[in-house]
Image 1 (tube, rainbow, N blue to C red):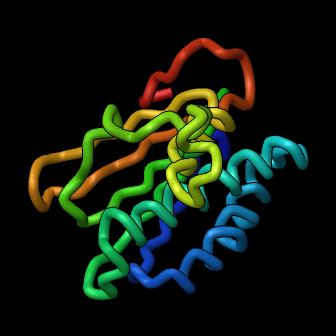
Image 2 (cartoon, rainbow, N blue to C red):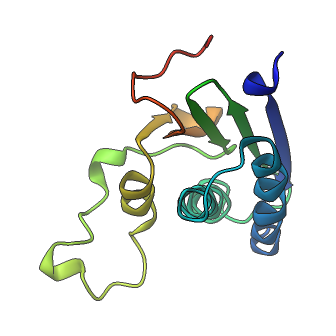
Length: 150
């Protein structure tokens, strides 16, 4: 695996204080990618939101359940996968945080932020206890679309 095809993994217990582990983990990843300040901030905020959702909503802060974070560095993009052990959800039922009735709500912006900051976001919500996986991509080169093997 070349330097442009490196993979990093982090596994966390589902406790809110473990969200603090995301920034140093991504700083280690960034030593390989050398993103600019703006791109790193996008990566940090989106990944933090995904992990927060996995801990709080997916795993209901159950410390017996884990959240796994995988970052794969590819030639022209970074793929981030955040997987929980919860029951999954239908992303189509998440209300739009920009609708007038949702503007003052304190929650409901995580997925919106991920979609705003990242170039691609997919949510794979499985049935029952199979968990949920959020897959995000941040382009670091030409925007040619994702190819997992690249």
